[in-house]
Image (cartoon, rainbow, N blue to C red; front, top):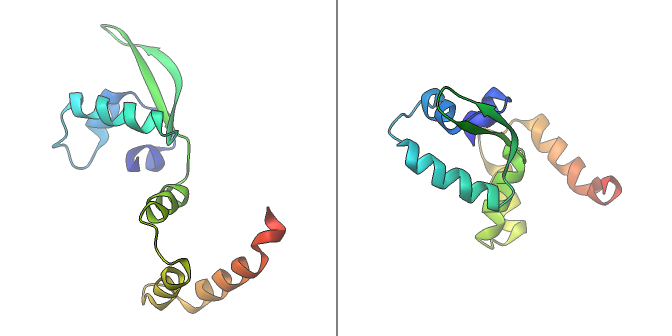
Length: 112
């Protein structure tokens, strides 16, 4: 997912393997992961591309990094209020971001 978010361009499985900073993944493993992410609608097949030996699928991220994180957090079924408090208490978040978070929470119904 990170490779697709960072490049913001559709990539084949082979391109994903070679552009990954952590190249310990085997191409076969990437195919399994891509298939799983496609079933979960986290990625989508953007188009098919001819390579020297076959036709390859080019994948793109179908959800943002924020949406992906939210899905995984919510899968753990946390107490949302306590979770938000933990985020706000995080020392990596500056005062302006904390203020923006409060604004978003107060106005979320208006956005939907």
